[in-house]
Image 1 (cartoon, rainbow, N blue to C red):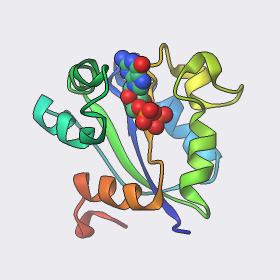
Image 2 (tube, protein in one colour):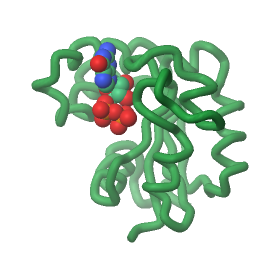
Image 3 (cartoon, protein in one colour):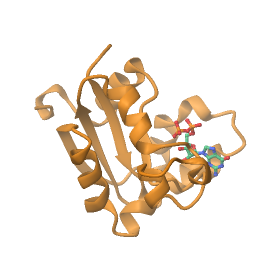
Image 4 (cartoon, helix red, strand yellow):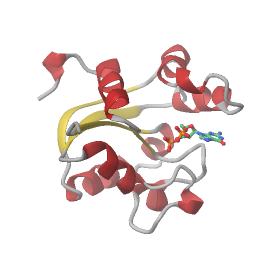
Length: 138
Ligand code: GDP
């Protein structure tokens, strides 16, 4: 079990002014911020990040959405980070997300769902390295 996960505050939440609220929920849940930056993905970079979904019908929509505005990317640390963060963000579809989760509070649809959270330790490491060099992780 690794103690790190990776997150992005997606363009919908950024545009709606929820970055501060989401970071507060992350802090209150006991995660430490190891690295963080605000940036904007090109369509090419968004496509690369979500390459695993290339064959899914929503891939084009997902790439357009994720590259349409700024995001905040972060590496987070806590014991059992991947699983605990997935619990904190809630179900992919906010209509199915539990009370008290980030997506319940801030997501608007299954596509525009406010935050990303890695689904495994392996992907957390790959996704963190996509945005941050070792020198940018504290
Ligand atoms: P996650 O791990 O909960 O983020 O969900 P997935 O790995 O299944 O999907 C990745 C992302 O693709 C989701 O967070 C959504 O932003 C997007 N997505 C998933 N399903 C749909 C869908 O049916 N329609 C659209 N437009 N986007 C979707």
